Length: 70
Image (cartoon, rainbow, N blue to C red; front, side, top):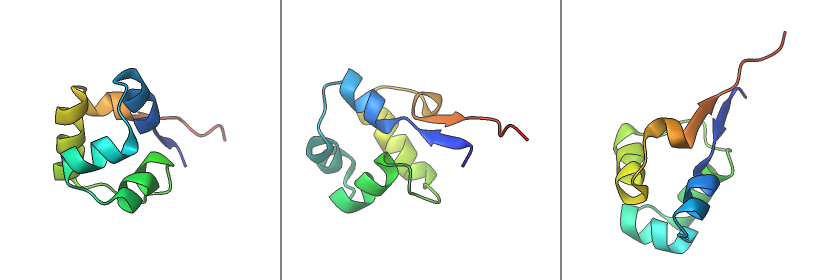
């Protein structure tokens, strides 16, 4: 998939655990884990907004587009 989720990178930069982020964005640990591992098929803008507020970052810091080499 050409969309890479760099949530783990931003969490490490902010020294925040998955449990802590889960509590602050009011998202279940399992759903946040699915997003963190890149297995999510979609993300709500409201969820992305909440994550960006807590991590004090931009959506582009979390989501990255990698062009397929065809």
